[in-house]
Image (tube, rainbow, N blue to C red):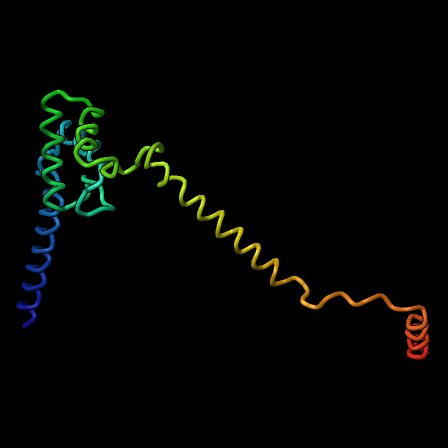
Length: 162
């Protein structure tokens, strides 16, 4: 029985060593990854464009079929020698300023940039006015005391302190 245990321990140790060597050697045998400059340029432009299907995802991040088609169009236009601005202008002409992840701050785009600020100011002022009215005393001020009443109050206070 001892011979069997020692053989199984040796064989399991040998298996562990072989597995360790395989895991160490695998990265050495892996092919070097080369990046395509066309792909990088396409992704850079695609990150600036909004997917018309997904709404809040860029064309680079979207898995929609339309986004795939848009990425293909960007690749084709880059190969044709068009600049980033020409490619973006192509999509803006086709889909409007909505296709831009950061719409311009003029025309209809001004509303997108200014509306949150205006909303914040309106809500802040409304809250201030509401709290100011709510914390204001609700009872009208008391009328001034006559000389006789003032004398009685002083007399009552003197009696309390003595």
